[in-house]
Image: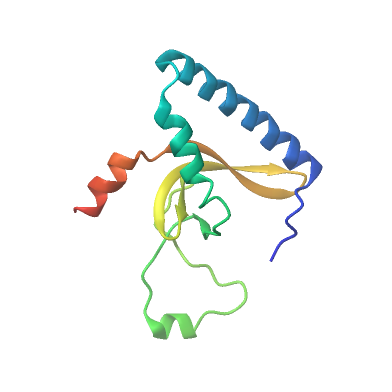
Amino acid sequence: MSDPTPDPDWANAMAEQAGDAHNATEKLLEKFGSHPQVTTTANDIDMVLDIPVQLTVELGRTRIAIKNILQLAQGSVVELDGLAGEPMDVLVNGCLIAQGEVVVVNDKFGIRLTDIVTPSERVRKLHR
């Protein structure tokens, strides 16, 4: 498991992003005005903020026969269905929540989210 203390460069990138998100939220709340349910919802969500979830970034997938898996060795290449330059899927507990592109900061990989799956899109995919 990785160290929970973020690298200073990652912390700066995340703080910059958080500031942008906070400003956007404030503008949205100003647009709709103050609403009593916002406070209630904020209190309700506090109960689940510390629940750990599994975040996965998926490059691609493939189906392969067991006999082919047994033939894999160091240096073997496995072809995936993802294309180079295609957005990668971001899954939380196996559920697609976003897509993004790879970023590198100080020789460490990360992902910049480019598209968030809306709750209605997630529900629609469940019914397929």
